[in-house]
Image (cartoon, rainbow, N blue to C red; front, side, top):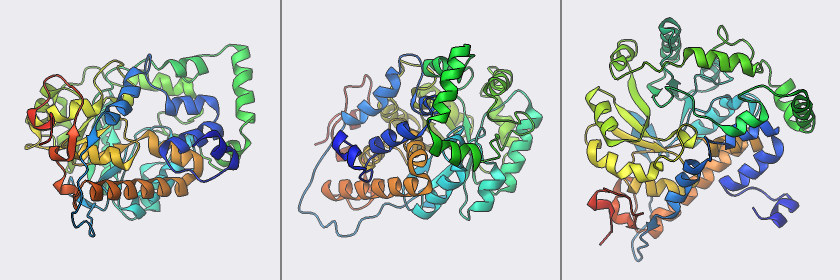
Amino acid sequence: MDNETRGLGLAPATASDYRELARKRLPRHLFDYLDGAAYGELTAAENQQAFGHLQLRQRVMRDVSQLNLSSRVLGQDLALPLILAPLGLAGAFARRAEVQAARAAEQAGAAFCESTVSICSIEEVRAATAAPFWYQLYVMRDRGYTRSLLARAQAAACPVLVLTVDLAVMGARYRDVRNGMAGSLSFGGKLTKAWDLLSHPQWLLDVGIRGKPLTFGNLTTAVPDARSLPEFKSWVDSQFDPRVTWKDLAWVRENWPGKIVLKGILDVDDAREAAAAGADGIVVSNHGGRQLDSVAASADALPRIVDAVGDRLEVLMDGGVRSGLDVVKALALGARACMIGRAWGYAVAARGEAGVAHMLSVMRNEMKVALALCGTTDIALLGSETLLQTRNVPDAPAAFANSP
């Protein structure tokens, strides 16, 4: 959205437009939490740039009057190959945001994944929706509490458990440090933050007043007040378990009868370990660049991992997906479906459920256009031949180097 369009207040058309609207609507510390990444934020930028370097192969004079975007992902039939990724604190961006996003996903035929550290509880999302939704979990030190969360997700009929495995320790997110999300503020800093909150009356009314209770819905006994960021950080530091190994997946399997997906796989050897350990799927992900900076972009890591384990488990990806064209490229590289995180966070912060619904509609239309102009009628038919070239990634499978 250019300056003239913003000034006229015209409708957003892209994830970038929604990002700008979210930036204006959210208090600075919340926008930085949503938008920021670790250290110099190089990997976060690379995630998007990697898609920009992938070229689609345009084909013409094909019958593309009937296009199919539906797929079956981990046993669930989806109208779109998209999952709204688990997004911590989403309910701080808009009133009961997890419920709004889950409803939009349900209407669009996409999947929604509830975060352990969401504002809305598993039960609240279940009561507001009819479609099955996924649940994301961290393996915490308190296994009794972990088991109780798994039982609640089972009671809500969640078919897929997404186990986040790249949080043995927290990455340093310097925007959060500067604005007090991950540390203390001086007296002057506190005054600046208070003024920032008061300078966003629309957010304050929507979330701060009408959005109550502002608690971590799945962690109320552990962290009663979501506004107490020091208390939340203390809980995170005490519960995220750096001792977790592949052996712990067996414990999760004992307590979870459904599908298990490991999110945060970026290395081929780890993908093979996941397959050997009995995972049903993996998400090729660098946590949106929010953990370790200067690692591979998700789209760059994807082809090697698909080549290594794609016949043994389902491979999804996230990181940098901002459009339907990105989704088509990811599927051409071998992903079964894509997770989107920041994109729906921007949309729900800007316009609530309507924003998420519109964003999904835009992405659907972009996927259809890409399919048609690549001469393909079904996303299941996407493959390396859909791409004219890929980035020069070391050790990339030959199948993804160049199309005919």
